[in-house]
Length: 141
Image 1 (cartoon, one colour):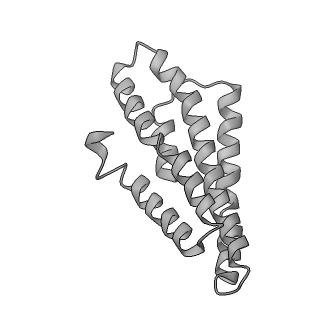
Image 2: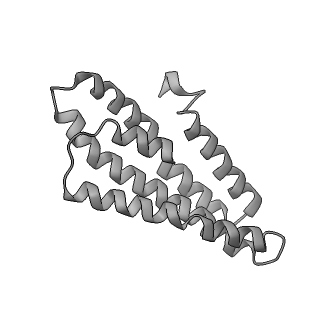
Image 3: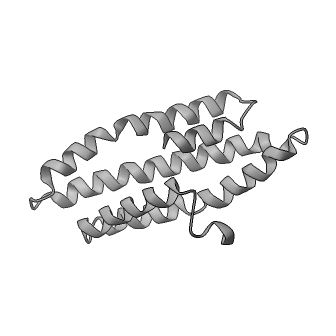
């Protein structure tokens, strides 16, 4: 998550009040991750594992939506600024990359009501996907 956050803000040189609040919202959700992780670890082998999985996948859905809102707002400055054409290409790449996050994390969240192991596996695979910047689908993004 830090890498993606850095990926965004290394490009952003201009910001406004809303961007600061969207960044704060994202960071709030990120700092919350240890709680659902500990909850999941505690209840994974018990009947209440579904609730823990719902909370765990829900936080990642919230983070994904926050990243998406943050990026959509930050990209306005990049795509409208004609003075930095090299950053425009990177902005387009990130936009293509981030289109997968919210719907796939929503699917993982929905899956947590049906199968905890499958929803957790989806979160793990999504983390790997984003860590690898969309590889192996990078050329088709």
